[in-house]
Amino acid sequence: MNYLCRPLELESLSPFDFFSWYDVRLMSKKNEDDLLHFCNGNFQHPSYRAKTERFLQGVKERSRRCLLKVYQYDFPDTAEFNGSIMDCSVPVTEPMETYCELALMLFCPYQIRDDLTVDMSFVAKF
Image (cartoon, rainbow, N blue to C red; front, side):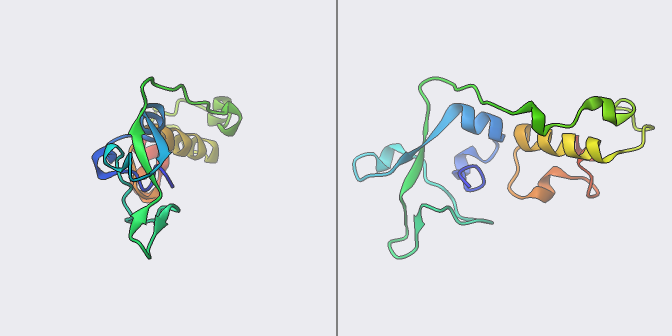
């Protein structure tokens, strides 16, 4: 939800860049002006309190970029593609769709899942 409700100033960032360069911090009166505020749009951030119309957390740029840990076991084996994923003549398989969905979710900016597809295909967008 931190990514999906990211501040408007960061809407062009992919999840990879967002989590590498930015950190979520508790918001207080002391640091409120130093933090970027989340944006409730398609989703509501869990730290938002409707009664006070405030967020309990905000986003701050990291002093050093972090390296994200991605489990390769979530990605299908590319040998299951039965050809190049970039070759349009190769029939699209379920492992191709899964691989492209995960890669796009990591490296492309989006707000909703449909932002990652073209004609309901992750491979076509990839």
